Image (tube, rainbow, N blue to C red):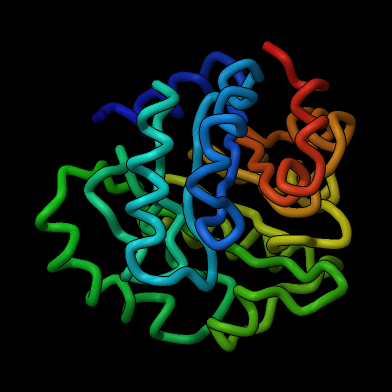
Length: 241
């Protein structure tokens, strides 16, 4: 499935909002996929992201294969490591952790990934990934050995996002981290969006429809929700299409 990025850009230009449901292979059993995806299909979700910080090899591919059986929504990899790459998905967020300074997550892992990616037809979407502190250590922080950006350093966050765009990133992803205690403030989203000419993704800590709508209003083109659905599938009822 090509044209993923083109559709994201077109939606942004029209003011249409995307909702991505993030599924962590470590937290989703294959036997539960059918029921979960049926709820995704009935919701306003536009994309499915698959990935996590710590995932055993082959779990991602097995999960993607099962998800494909139950939905026509595009499946985009959100990989925490090279071993999560699978040709069974439609695309991949080629993430560069631009909020950190660990060369492995700025370019090192990408070099490792090239030989695998050359064997797939995945649509690659270069994405500047910015981790923002949320009051507790996240798995991304622990594994990447990088520090998140402070919430009160708004201008630095804005400048980092803009630098990512100038380096050629096609998306900017503001992330509070899996299981974040609170979502990213609308002020941060708004100021980042004002500086960008590319679509903006916002995720982490969004647990209510009100918080989701607040992120959209502030400028998020795509909102990502993961933990909230894992902990309370009833949340889907609030987001029926």
